[in-house]
Length: 178
Ligand code: INI
Image (cartoon, rainbow, N blue to C red; front, side, top):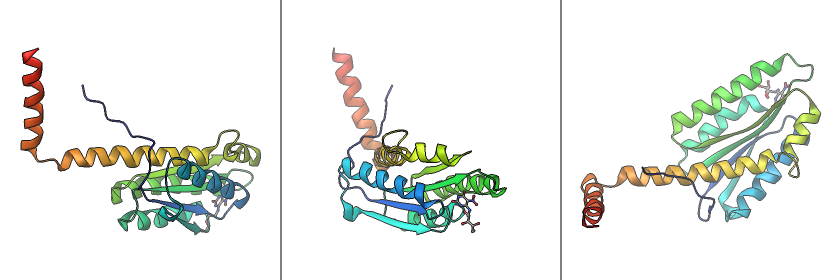
């Protein structure tokens, strides 16, 4: 069995962040802890680009555009859709999650879903709080993990087949000798 995992060493990697302005009292907290999470793992401030969009509904297009630019190892989406009294909730949260997933598959770049969808304002505040759920910091960690594991998988896919089979045969010869 061969196990591949992402690492948490992000030195040299580049990240894009798309953050919604709607419910800024929550999304600014998500942004702060996301940036802190990235820099804590070795990402330089100059390797982080932040784009602000009006609301969660607009996140997918901006994320897809950033991902397709070939400038980032991963893109992180941050937003807060709060049910409250708005009938918008279901439309916006569904479109944000569907669009973000689609953007990742279309661009072939990891795109992280750091959009809170909560019933109440209090729940959103709690999830954004770095001393509680810290969803911004978690989004940063997921982005690093995905960027590094996808790099590993791509490097393996790019290896010439002959090289791969040589490696395997060297290993199996060594195993047979034992
Ligand atoms: N945008 C959010 O990010 N969160 C919300 O809770 C929200 N609500 O409740 O309406 C919201 N609406 C704005 C939406 O994302 C778009 O910006 C707007 O509809 C313009 O397209």
